[in-house]
Length: 178
Image (tube, helix red, strand yellow):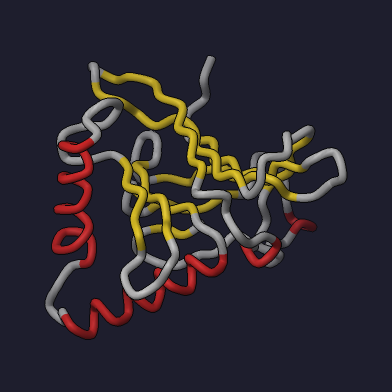
């Protein structure tokens, strides 16, 4: 899992090979505009029977006083991908910035792609775009980018575990659905 502005990883080295970036987005609506409430990335087609917080391994669990661990979306956008796609995304971002030193990766590169995607798939996203199943240039990898619930904030992430205790999915919870 990475945010748009920095590659903060949530232990994705525990899994690889996202199954076709099967992203499910649960929608809520605010003034008629879609608001993304939850996202799920499946790594295989096994059913999750339990969930645990997706940790980085760097948390100080001794000082944990409740709540949840998660990731910070300081841009209002997030990305779900496996480790191979994460490396390809970071390589692309570095290369793009070197070729466009005055450029803004979001405004100059992603915003036009998101807008184009919204015109192509207008259901459940605003005209400026709300999600993108992005083929990462220079690789055979894909990543799914999406708006994070109410925008900037801290969002919890959970591993879905199958009957054998193996990770089968990653779930990001952005809005409490009553």
